[in-house]
Length: 448
Length: 189
Image 1 (cartoon, chains in turn blue, orange):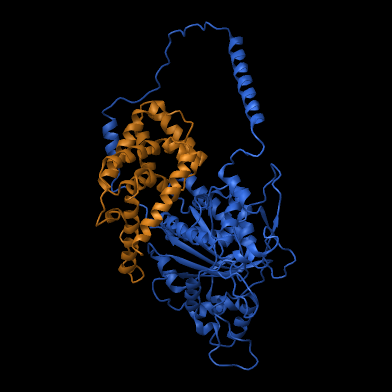
Image 2 (cartoon, one colour):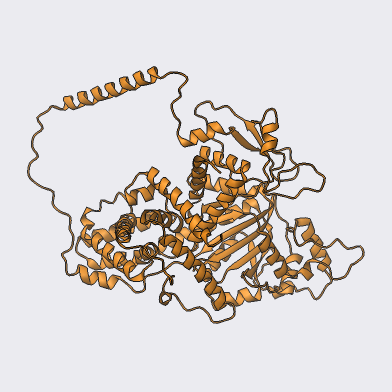
């Protein structure tokens, strides 16, 4: 059973208002405790459910009723200040200063006497955050630059608490759990604690996480208030993993999508609409969610895109109240069910060759995110199969922009295979991507 | 947001000069957002309308006392939330067998097979369960969850609205989250 202060830390974590120190303490707790992770998952689920509750508007315009009533009452006006002369003060001004100084002197002296009288083995109780900090190893998670895998491994080192110090930039992600090959020795498997291992080691305060196997923690930020600090957090988050899931709730997808499309275009990304998505947007059909997939964007570009989208949304809201479409968004790992849905929508037949072909690259494992190299293999495999669409079939594509696929996203029903020529077109026209490319699944989700 | 706030102050100044149509603009501007919150507090459309309307009337009466050191909406929100909490305290909490927001204020969905009725029903059912769980929380706990998760407000604003210390907000949110978690998972046992 988790102690109360740990549970408080977790609920505050869900609130999203922890300071850097408390956030670090929360991450340490989550790293060490399966129970904490399970609790956090439940709390975040509930918070997400609340956030995505349908918005309810007034059944009728109240303005007329309110105006009718207030027209019966006099308008409020600025009440004139009383012109009666204030009674003259009987005390000269210097006495006020003297009184204040005397109070300060008394308070200061009392405090000094109190602190001086405290026995040394009876420390003053610390607030919760400091208790959490004192009881857990003071840890700093630093990226291990020696890793050649392109993803950060967490190395935890002990730091003495030496009074005020600059807090490192808060980090909220740990590496996603990856199954290790058989026979690779003890690893931390989700659901099993390595606490015994940790406690048994001679210097158990020094935790060496070679490859963290902990589930990734979602990061939720306000799209419209991505200030410099939050933007840095966002960028750090996006750089950690090669695959990113962005959950982007919106008020009305039929209005939000064009805004997103415009921003993508400005960032050099062309959205290829599947036929179903095209129809829904043309009508437009309300309440439809869209999934946007691309592997042709870098972590930094994605961060820029989200920041720009936030700016555009904020501008729209400022110009006309209620025009804003977005609020918070969440970055997370791909969910296995969504990954499966996507691979089936893109067409498993397209992802794996129908017949074994000599001297062709191996088929793609649809259970794994497609790496850049594998995508090239897919494109290579697909060449010569069927009739590739010429670029002319995408008249609004300039031939230079990178591509992203847009599908209608309805996970509650079996996925319909996306337009096969469109998918082939997507994979056949991949462009060069800068450093730290990510495989992006962005879900534009209606709140109504 | 600054220009919206500045715009609000201009409308308020116009109201204080006797131009009631300026207040009508303020009502139209904020009625939906206020109604959504109050509805989630009370789970009753009629009560929510009454509370929202009363909040605007109260704001009108007290407009000369609005000092402008917070956003107009925050001030209005405070009036409405306090009314809603008071009303909820007076009412007996009952479990509702039917719930969910009224459908007449939503646009009709497209009848294509892409808006399947069963999907909408499933979503409505989930929302009903969530609203029922919210209804079983105390008014204070319900208020902080709505303000935090639905309105996306910060501790400081919530403390300002409810006129309690930030520590109280944190503590209420803590208990509210745990209580909600237990309520939502009662049926899973």
